[in-house]
Length: 336
Image: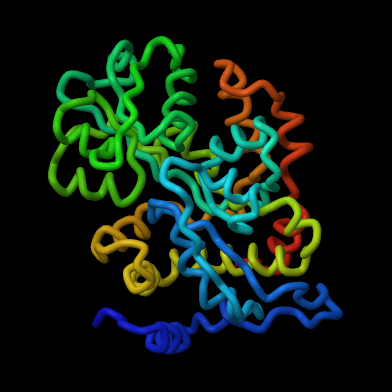
């Protein structure tokens, strides 16, 4: 099958592939209200596991949005702050990052889960298990990054104190955590796509944990969609349509991974089609109807609370920072 090179070809192929249902017209205004705004800004952050938010551009336009922007956030920052400051309206990020942001009082609302695990924990020849990482170095981009928070939860789950038992090595822009690991300067690295695909392709390191396959991590969402609290409150119809487009895009990542991978390349979100396609074939994008996002928020809030990385209780995080109304409606509307 030839690789698609344009949006027109992409949409034509979708139609021929009988996926036109993904692009069906949104309900009439009488059913859910007309769009209060036709502008939506989505966080453009590293990593292609969050492919649905990038693949969703045409779906967002089909929902009535005429101004769809992907806004890069400052290096070393997480999307919760960008969402709260109003730099972007929505973003998909790791559940623990969102939980930690809510604990800091960040004004965002978690709307639903997008996909299950994508992280893989790589170690060098000196370590063969999680227990053997005690006292060793781990490469991360910055404290509070997705890799830091996820590995801290992993360490706590196996009885380690992540603040004392692991040596966190933050990276500079010129040498990211994967480069530090490849160079042998750290003992472990927690990567998200396309980094794991690259390391496995080069046969560098050993994977001792895959969050898409290994329990309990595979039983919960990895990345979730959050919106600016003011946007969600002021523009409920637009919020529902954004969530619908991204969930449809998650379905598209399952049904048409080759075309979705090409959209990532065409959009400039990654340069390697092969790694993008591998990611889309490996990451479980088909669980958003099945898994309950509140379970994920509670699980990670408990893990971070146990090790003192957040102060708020899981109940407070859920009560103050989540809204499942739109998701529950869409689960009924978008039945498989």
